[in-house]
Image (cartoon, rainbow, N blue to C red; front, side, top):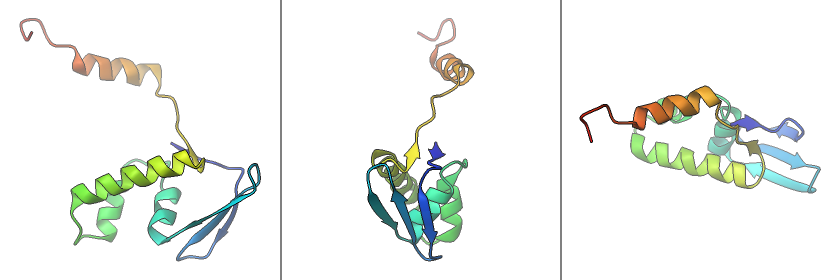
Length: 102
C-alpha cells in the first residue's frame, strides 16, 4: 500500500484534511483514520493501533483497520501495490500440499 504523494495535506494533529486536486475533493480524516493513513505504508498497522487502544479487542481493530484501508483505497487516498513475483510464488508454495497430503 502506498500513500498518494500528490495530495495537499493540512495536518491539524487530531485530524487531517487532504485535498485531491485531480477531482477537486476534500477528505477530512478523524484521528484514527489520520493515523491509519500515515501508517498505510508500514507493516503491522493494526498492531500499532492495538498499542494505542489496549482495551479494545484486537480482532475488532484488525477488521476496522482492514475496512479503513479498503475505504482509503476506494476513495483514492492510497494505492495498492502489486505483489512482487517472489511474494506470489511464496504464497503459492504455502498452499501446495506436500506429497501424501492430498
